[in-house]
Image (tube, rainbow, N blue to C red; front, side):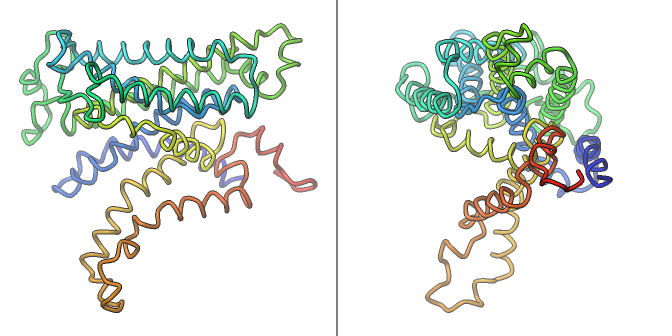
Length: 366
């Protein structure tokens, strides 16, 4: 119990440590700090899905579609091939609202569905979204994506103006480069985390929990399941759209639509399951472990294996094989971890208290 109480406050350490990382001396600190940038974006995506899946109990398998919608709306509003060329602030707001609106429009006809049927419909929505984006050659540029995405930060503010308030001479003047964009993503994640914390303790958050636990009982209490579900989907999709806007700027393009397919949605669900369904600190922990291993630790291990000449220990006919890299085994490692989690920690590493009590073995103290 003491360990759980201690781990519950780990997000404070998480945010403080990453906020201090760019100020550490040396070039290695800057390089490693940039490697952590995807963690912030995927953490926002996972928090958005946690609203739908963890709070409201709706199994949504198409969250990556809203992620892609946010990236492409930002691309359309900022790239030079279109006449809009808006600032990032306007593009981010538009991406959030567009993803939320599309989420509500797509979910409204399916409110009567539950369980596996709802999951299948949301899966189909994610597949259709990728197919539509890929075939909009004149708008989305097909498989090539839109780019370069390099908007001004605010209306009327150009990048050279940053030199008037930068803290270190070695920092550049482009807001979309390190470390300005690093701090922007970290602040956006912190604000999202705090906002969802307030919503959890509000009447809306309690209503979502009631809906998740027993929809019939929630209806008898005067709650409207349809309105609650639409609000959860709108908020979750909007957060995913904002994460997509940040992702587009970080990549300087929208990238191939295949990056927003079912695999991305499942990876996000795995982060939530690993950390703890319905628990914000658990979601951050799941992203830190899963995405951190995939995009930060795995490349470092591959470089170490290459520098240490580990392959020289194998017979010559096996050297250079793809399966001698750590990255070749990452999906197997993901699957093994999830199997072990379902066996020994079905509620996640930091489960929500209700889930922890529900999955507690009979006679065992929580």
